[in-house]
Amino acid sequence: MKEKKKKKIDWSLDRGWQTPQILPYQRITLDPTVCVFHYGFECFEGMKAYKDARGRLRLFRPRINMERFKKSAARVALPSFDSEELLKLIAEFVQVEERFVLLKEEYSLYLRTVLMGTSGGLGVTAPTSALLYIVASPVGEYYGEGYSGISLEATNGSIATRAWPGGAGRHKVGGNYAPCVAPEKTAQSHGYQQCLWLFGDDDAITEAGTMNIFISLRVSKSERFELVTPPLDGVILPGITRDCILKLAQEKLEHLGWLVDERKIIMVELAAASDSGALLEIFGTGTAAIVSPVEKIKWGQKIIKCGPSENHKAADLASLMTAG
Ligand SMILES: *Cc1c(COP(=O)(O)O)cnc(C)c1O
Image (cartoon, rainbow, N blue to C red; front, side, top):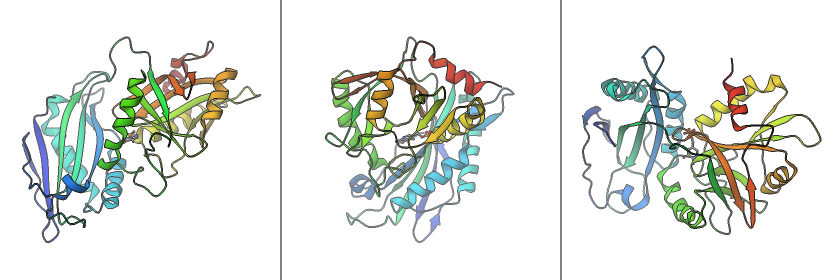
């Protein structure tokens, strides 16, 4: 990691937000009783800065990150903020760190924005002081060479549930992530890289690892194709990459006769599509992993091969979506 500086802003209930500062990367000193350590009063955002073909700095759809960050903060009783002001600060920070934003395909500056409660005392109450900071790190290709797609182990409530209706799974709050790591280690001990998180008795597909999931298939008894992603029904993180893929697909695929759907899809349907040859491809989406093809999914004793079918290469959909 090559973080060089961080941007820091303190907040307290009686004084509000203090003057933001850009400081050298450094440690944070906090009292052992602060609420973030004990009860997880924390939320975050992940976004990227790029340089465009003309070398200008660009943030990728950052207003959506700011709005999502605000909702996450509200869910865990952290203070609100003016998202346009925060965006200005992030833009200023990126300007200062411009030399780390490489003008090279697949390279970007990853920005991690964190908000945490810093009041102490061990009471489970709304934080009366908070700290917001941003650290940055240049990132390149997410997967190395020779990479052929990720493998997933379908994980349902008999092992672990990532999110549930009314819970906090739709928000980027720190408490959602640690409980997913032990199940992921279990999947890894079986030779799979990440969990495909299922929900409910019918094994509905929700997300994979920390990515939203897309499935393309041939509609049964028809010549039409469909791109499906599970709906934002409260157990799914509303990914910004997900939203981009949906918009692109509507623009590029619908006029070619494709159906682009946000709908519930269960493992039985996926397995049947795979068995009948109707399954074309599966991919995950997220800011860090961008678009990641899925190679196979283990569901109970069944292994579902997700690689591209004979007459449909993984690149087909990607090239359809980026054409024009
Ligand atoms: C961040 C995240 C995503 C992807 O969201 P993007 O906005 O596309 O980066 C998906 N699932 C989870 C659980 C996440 O935390």
